[in-house]
Amino acid sequence: MRSQLVLATFLATSILFGACNPTPTNTRTATQYTDDLGRSVEIVVPVTKMVSLAPNLTEIVFAAGAGDRLSGVTTADNFPPEVDTIPKFNAVPIDFEAIRTLEPDVVLATDQVNSPKDASMFESLGTPVYFLTFSSLDDIFDAVVTVGSLAGTKRRASDHSTTLRQAVMDLRDRTRVIESRPRVLFLIGEDTLFGFGEGSYVHEIIDAAGGISVSANEPLAAPVFSDEYVVEQEPDVIVGSFPPDVDAGRLLELHPAWRTVPAIQKGRVYAINPDVVLRPGPRVVEGAYRMALLLHPELFGDSAVTSSR
Image (tube, helix red, strand yellow):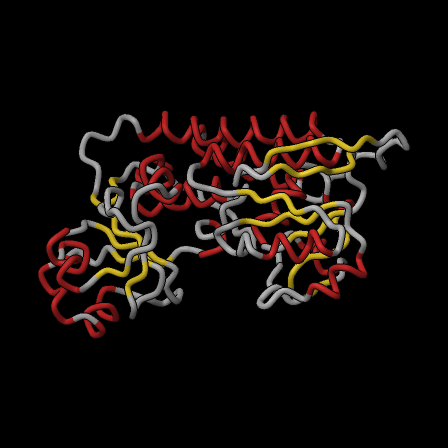
């Protein structure tokens, strides 16, 4: 069945996790780069040792075919399985001394997790820091290529990035035929209603999956929604990083005012693996397909997505 082939295509990209190129040659050059914060960073490339300050960055490094260059990751890292063999350190607060002993050529950071102010501390230790930021799916896929350029694995990284982009395009082609798209509210947690405002890749995930994100135009990047807001928006579907057994009844207990919300009345409340949505890394492609399966299961027949956990 074609749907199974489409799903197999993007799941097959997981084969690239952990794949590595031979160790870079001895020909290394100090090169000036501009990171996503507009900072000028001098890095000796190809990088042979790097440290990741966030789980999504680690997944991007593996996607770039450079997992063997990682000399350290955070204690929050849990994917791919190879991270269990890599030295770990605390990232909140950052254990600068532990990272210094790892002697990385570069530290990868993201302003969505790490403070840009930490760059000065790393610079005092003689370690360059490259910041990445993620507002769109393209930012994520571009980051795979960027890391590949730093590590000397650009061809593998470019191939993987292209595969990820194509998988999203295939999903958009599949959901383009949908005439009536459900209004979707994505929430982080079931009690305090954390969500996403304008400028977030999460809205692209929902769009590719065949939905309309009700909070896409909210001016705050990370809003906290009120019960009144949810009632006014009238979402047809509520998806979130909820406990697996969440249902409409559970949300109604926590938020009695939602009794008129279409998603509650129709029982269209779903939990999704937070790691494939909240981590801006290569697995957001899986997140988009999982979202599509929740919103439009009829498009996929009897196919299913295998968990990446």
